[in-house]
Image (tube, rainbow, N blue to C red; front, side, top):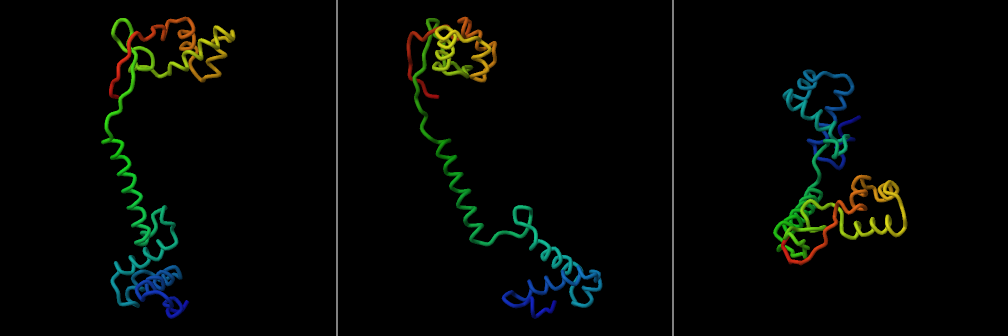
Length: 169
Protein backbone atom coordinates (compact mmCIF):
# COMPACT_ATOMS: atom_id res chain seq x y z
CA UNK A 1 0.00 0.00 0.00
CA UNK A 2 1.47 3.32 -1.08
CA UNK A 3 1.34 6.33 1.22
CA UNK A 4 -0.18 8.41 -1.59
CA UNK A 5 -3.09 5.92 -1.88
CA UNK A 6 -3.91 6.33 1.78
CA UNK A 7 -3.59 10.14 1.79
CA UNK A 8 -6.48 10.74 -0.61
CA UNK A 9 -9.26 12.52 1.27
CA UNK A 10 -7.56 12.33 4.68
CA UNK A 11 -5.12 14.46 6.62
CA UNK A 12 -1.46 13.47 6.60
CA UNK A 13 -1.34 12.48 10.28
CA UNK A 14 -4.15 9.96 9.93
CA UNK A 15 -2.63 8.60 6.74
CA UNK A 16 0.83 8.25 8.27
CA UNK A 17 -0.63 6.48 11.29
CA UNK A 18 -2.39 4.02 9.02
CA UNK A 19 0.78 3.36 7.01
CA UNK A 20 2.79 2.77 10.20
CA UNK A 21 0.16 0.33 11.44
CA UNK A 22 0.22 -1.49 8.10
CA UNK A 23 4.01 -1.75 8.23
CA UNK A 24 3.83 -3.03 11.81
CA UNK A 25 1.25 -5.60 10.72
CA UNK A 26 3.67 -6.54 7.91
CA UNK A 27 6.30 -7.60 10.44
CA UNK A 28 8.44 -4.54 11.16
CA UNK A 29 9.28 -3.90 14.80
CA UNK A 30 8.34 -0.73 16.65
CA UNK A 31 12.02 0.20 17.07
CA UNK A 32 12.66 -0.20 13.33
CA UNK A 33 9.57 1.85 12.47
CA UNK A 34 10.69 4.61 14.85
CA UNK A 35 14.05 4.67 13.12
CA UNK A 36 12.60 4.71 9.60
CA UNK A 37 9.96 7.35 10.33
CA UNK A 38 12.26 9.39 12.57
CA UNK A 39 9.61 9.44 15.30
CA UNK A 40 9.59 8.38 18.94
CA UNK A 41 8.55 4.91 20.05
CA UNK A 42 5.57 6.48 21.85
CA UNK A 43 4.39 8.10 18.58
CA UNK A 44 4.64 4.74 16.76
CA UNK A 45 2.70 2.96 19.52
CA UNK A 46 0.06 5.70 19.45
CA UNK A 47 -0.20 5.45 15.66
CA UNK A 48 -0.70 1.67 15.83
CA UNK A 49 -3.26 2.01 18.64
CA UNK A 50 -5.13 4.74 16.73
CA UNK A 51 -5.22 2.69 13.52
CA UNK A 52 -6.49 -0.38 15.37
CA UNK A 53 -9.25 1.63 17.06
CA UNK A 54 -10.63 2.51 13.64
CA UNK A 55 -11.70 -1.11 13.24
CA UNK A 56 -13.27 -1.53 16.67
CA UNK A 57 -16.91 -0.43 16.96
CA UNK A 58 -17.45 2.64 19.12
CA UNK A 59 -19.67 0.86 21.67
CA UNK A 60 -16.87 -1.68 22.19
CA UNK A 61 -14.31 0.98 23.06
CA UNK A 62 -13.34 2.31 19.65
CA UNK A 63 -12.70 5.92 18.65
CA UNK A 64 -14.77 8.77 20.03
CA UNK A 65 -17.85 9.92 18.22
CA UNK A 66 -18.03 12.88 15.92
CA UNK A 67 -19.07 16.25 17.31
CA UNK A 68 -22.62 15.86 16.02
CA UNK A 69 -22.94 12.46 17.72
CA UNK A 70 -21.59 13.89 20.96
CA UNK A 71 -24.02 16.82 20.78
CA UNK A 72 -26.92 14.47 20.12
CA UNK A 73 -25.95 12.27 23.07
CA UNK A 74 -25.58 15.30 25.33
CA UNK A 75 -28.99 16.63 24.32
CA UNK A 76 -30.54 13.20 25.02
CA UNK A 77 -28.80 13.07 28.40
CA UNK A 78 -29.98 16.58 29.23
CA UNK A 79 -33.54 15.69 28.24
CA UNK A 80 -33.41 12.63 30.50
CA UNK A 81 -32.02 14.70 33.38
CA UNK A 82 -34.73 17.34 32.93
CA UNK A 83 -37.43 14.67 32.90
CA UNK A 84 -36.02 13.15 36.10
CA UNK A 85 -35.86 16.59 37.74
CA UNK A 86 -39.49 17.25 36.83
CA UNK A 87 -40.47 14.01 38.56
CA UNK A 88 -38.35 14.80 41.61
CA UNK A 89 -39.53 18.36 42.01
CA UNK A 90 -43.12 17.85 40.93
CA UNK A 91 -45.68 19.12 43.41
CA UNK A 92 -46.84 16.36 45.77
CA UNK A 93 -49.96 14.62 44.58
CA UNK A 94 -52.86 13.99 46.87
CA UNK A 95 -54.79 10.77 46.96
CA UNK A 96 -57.71 9.44 48.95
CA UNK A 97 -56.87 6.86 51.63
CA UNK A 98 -59.29 4.79 53.67
CA UNK A 99 -59.09 4.52 57.47
CA UNK A 100 -60.65 1.79 59.59
CA UNK A 101 -62.57 2.04 62.88
CA UNK A 102 -59.30 1.96 64.84
CA UNK A 103 -57.94 5.03 62.97
CA UNK A 104 -55.29 3.15 60.98
CA UNK A 105 -55.02 2.95 57.21
CA UNK A 106 -56.69 -0.08 55.67
CA UNK A 107 -56.86 -1.61 52.22
CA UNK A 108 -54.58 -0.45 49.44
CA UNK A 109 -53.90 2.78 51.34
CA UNK A 110 -51.89 0.85 53.95
CA UNK A 111 -48.13 1.17 53.57
CA UNK A 112 -47.58 -2.61 53.39
CA UNK A 113 -50.32 -3.26 50.83
CA UNK A 114 -49.21 -4.87 47.58
CA UNK A 115 -52.58 -5.93 46.23
CA UNK A 116 -55.27 -3.48 45.11
CA UNK A 117 -58.76 -3.49 46.59
CA UNK A 118 -60.16 -4.43 43.17
CA UNK A 119 -57.98 -7.55 43.06
CA UNK A 120 -59.06 -8.54 46.58
CA UNK A 121 -62.73 -8.21 45.53
CA UNK A 122 -62.01 -10.22 42.38
CA UNK A 123 -60.32 -13.02 44.39
CA UNK A 124 -63.29 -13.24 46.77
CA UNK A 125 -65.73 -13.20 43.85
CA UNK A 126 -63.89 -16.06 42.12
CA UNK A 127 -63.85 -18.11 45.32
CA UNK A 128 -67.35 -17.42 46.67
CA UNK A 129 -69.47 -16.87 43.55
CA UNK A 130 -67.73 -19.04 40.98
CA UNK A 131 -66.51 -21.74 43.37
CA UNK A 132 -62.89 -21.77 42.23
CA UNK A 133 -60.26 -23.28 44.50
CA UNK A 134 -57.50 -21.35 46.24
CA UNK A 135 -54.68 -22.99 44.26
CA UNK A 136 -56.44 -22.41 40.98
CA UNK A 137 -56.93 -18.72 41.77
CA UNK A 138 -53.33 -18.40 42.98
CA UNK A 139 -52.01 -19.95 39.76
CA UNK A 140 -54.28 -17.78 37.62
CA UNK A 141 -53.30 -14.51 39.34
CA UNK A 142 -49.67 -15.45 40.03
CA UNK A 143 -50.01 -14.98 43.81
CA UNK A 144 -48.91 -17.17 46.72
CA UNK A 145 -51.62 -19.68 47.71
CA UNK A 146 -51.34 -18.65 51.38
CA UNK A 147 -52.16 -15.04 50.48
CA UNK A 148 -55.17 -16.09 48.42
CA UNK A 149 -56.34 -18.41 51.21
CA UNK A 150 -56.05 -15.65 53.84
CA UNK A 151 -58.01 -13.25 51.62
CA UNK A 152 -60.73 -15.82 50.92
CA UNK A 153 -61.04 -16.69 54.63
CA UNK A 154 -61.13 -12.98 55.61
CA UNK A 155 -57.95 -13.26 57.67
CA UNK A 156 -56.39 -10.59 55.50
CA UNK A 157 -57.95 -7.41 54.12
CA UNK A 158 -61.16 -7.99 56.05
CA UNK A 159 -61.54 -4.50 57.48
CA UNK A 160 -63.37 -1.96 55.37
CA UNK A 161 -62.67 1.79 55.47
CA UNK A 162 -64.98 3.84 57.66
CA UNK A 163 -63.66 7.30 56.82
CA UNK A 164 -61.61 8.74 54.00
CA UNK A 165 -58.87 11.40 53.98
CA UNK A 166 -56.91 13.15 51.27
CA UNK A 167 -53.19 12.69 51.93
CA UNK A 168 -50.03 13.52 50.03
CA UNK A 169 -47.92 10.57 48.99
